[in-house]
Length: 135
Ligand code: 5GP
Ligand code: ZN
Image 1 (cartoon, protein in one colour):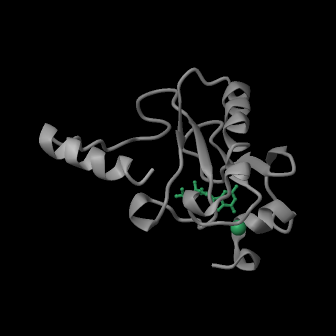
Image 2 (image 1 turned 90 degrees about the vertical axis):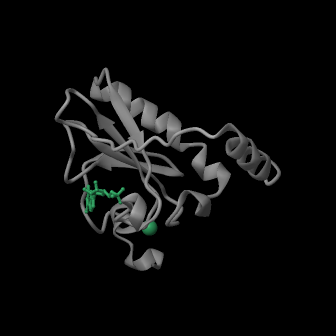
Image 3 (image 1 turned 30 degrees about the horizontal axis):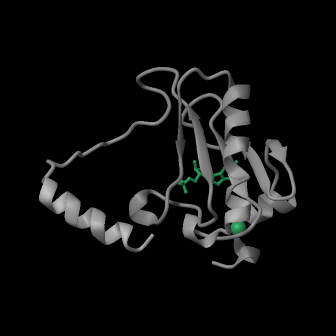
């Protein structure tokens, strides 16, 4: 999807209104319109790209300090930072965004399925060698 058609690029430009929490030359942050909990916010790079791997490092490194500011400002003791990539991974908006989601109790905030798999140390080591060689 092009930046021109992107809903989050329109929010950055001010063409679509948002409850803006923070803005600098590289980062924009605003309240999520369908929050999972009170204070659920989104932190996005101004650089348009669908997935984490599409965003330059210089833009990415400005994101987490802003997520931290928002987590502090929300007053949340417990919270998740979430960034989805691709439809199967629950991404709906194709402009990279980091969710900051307060977790005030069992029912509100992010619910996570965590289908941990049994460990096979030989397979894990082979995978480790494969990935490490590409970093
Ligand atoms: P995803 O599933 O792609 O990680 O999350 C997209 C998030 O963007 C959702 O939590 C959704 O509520 C939020 N969102 C989608 N459209 C808008 C919008 O127009 N304004 C705001 N503030 N949030 C939006
Ligand atoms: Zn965009």
